Image (cartoon, rainbow, N blue to C red; front, side, top):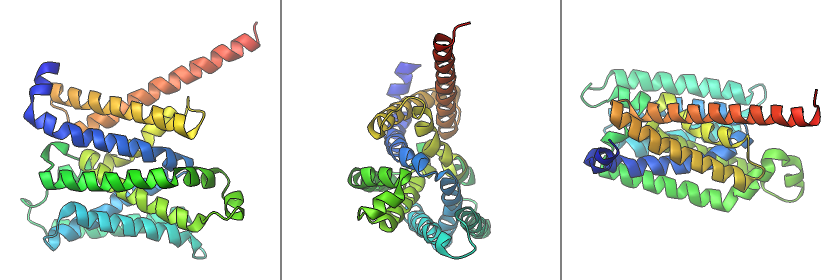
Length: 278
């Protein structure tokens, strides 16, 4: 099966984009957990349906159009909490519902041959075109360059924004940048896991690494290793059993998280037993 997998033209064409998405998503996953932006990823991923609907209606390129809409929604969410009476959760819910409703209405009017609804909802990396490969590589490069430039600043304001601002750090600008990058990462992941499952790619890697990491670099390294392992394993299992690749990868990440959580729990029990013997 392994030999057949590596000789499959379709799987080899999808493997590199899938590994790229896994690497980039797991890298930004650390910041998403540190800043508690899990619900943001849900809102932006579902709001991207509006971008896809606009693209189909106006015959525009799917991924570039969805990218613009996702970034705009993310930036609106970054600024909306400043308005009196609207919390960040409420703002996310408002834009999430409105954008998704718009996307559903627009896609309902589109020709069924022009829209792969299952692919949009649950992802289908096997049908990625060469042009989409280039767009994913372009987005991934922007995300990683931004992460290299701003990782330490984002990490600092995640735990002590007041001190960071007092030290002269442009906290408001950094938050806007982070929200925009999260929007880009959501679109990167939609092709693999779809609108519904994208959140799993953006939360589970860092959540798994968080049990063992003691620094930003340590958490990032563990997150990337776990994500690439789950991506490779998920692609091979999906090939062997004809399962949807995106869902299989997210399921593999869930299993890695459960294993990590169980080992962490067991490790804590052993430490307690050593310090407090019967």
